[in-house]
Length: 309
Length: 288
Image (cartoon, rainbow over all chains, first blue to last red; front, top):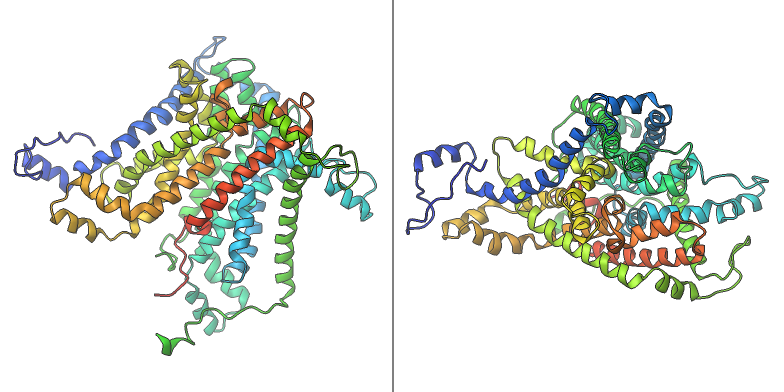
């Protein structure tokens, strides 16, 4: 990409370079000086993302305690305490991401038009995203705790006798994932839905399609790629659950997610090769789920949805 | 235009009394928002309360937890660090990201897909997965544990985010404008600085503010790379929360409220420039 040598200024301006033939041929293939604008970003991404990642990958094959390049992987998969973190993470992340995406569809479908207060609603929904997981966890501890407002409300309404245990277990983490993840999924899906040309649906309506037929045969197929993307992004958010799993979950038991395992290996046992191993396994599991979704997506309609500018 | 006013008046208003499905949908949204209000509200109320054991509200109102939080946590220093980190991340990610976004939006070249994938991956991966190897590398070169390490780590998701945010803004600009500038003798640098940058100001503002919001809230990467002097507000908040019992809960909540206030101010500023739904697709509101 950077094979083009900077042309020596010849006095008349930039066009004539030292070797017009080569430059011309390269330019025809789309390589010219403009690509130099890309260089800082590439240097950056290679230096701070690709190289550390490969370094971590290499490190994961050099276990601290010796014993073959795959010893750390073996250690992870033979120890149920470590191995089960994969399952625990997926059990949290997949339902949370699915709920966020599926709940967003009917709500966004109803709200895609213009109505009064839409901007206010969007602003209200962005608030939990900006607050982030740490603050949400702090709020959930107060709000869902045994003496919190939620349990108090349930008790005064006579729905439960004893406060229900909602924090310090699976549900606390699940709620924190919904509170930060749902607005995110909703906003994405709302924008995908708004990007679908409404005249398509109106055309179907003039041909006599009922509400459900219009949704099933017009909107849903056009929305499906957006749904896949939204699911991926929401899943990444949920899969990387870390602070809330520690703060509102039960980090020693049922919400000991894989990121906690990686963190403990790196910062409590200072076993960087093992921590890298866990990070690599985490990346592999996450990318496998995303690849599955994207594979499904690649079979769907890929053209314009008619509404994009 | 005016003769077609009727036909273009947009979708008809929905009736106030809707179908059961409408009530269900609105009910779900209101239930969700009430819970969010409960989550945020209980933090705010607790931070102003004297004692709160049972009962709907605390026994009394006091502001002393804020004074305590301000002194105990060294909040001023934390805020200064947070501002430093965010300013550096925003500036650097824009300088690196905008030119790259321009090339990726406009040009086709061999290996473009690979480059694009490299920029997408940091957004598609949990921060912990690349954060731990990154922190290891940063420690190896002596960057971690201080401000530069935190800034470098936070740049990793910020630059791809700038690129993704800027792409639609760049696609909006008519390439004929650049060609005209070229015809008039402007070089690459001049086209960029005097033609594109002014036209891209809205996009740059949007990308910058979104990166700012994300960096203030970015927990994992800062957590993995920060040393004692380079913690941002959110990391300090996490530490004081996970070390429960050392500090009064209300004091932690007071700090959380300060953080929330900061985020809300940023959000209000952000929403002046960004429509959250327009980030993914250009919303077609008026038929052309």
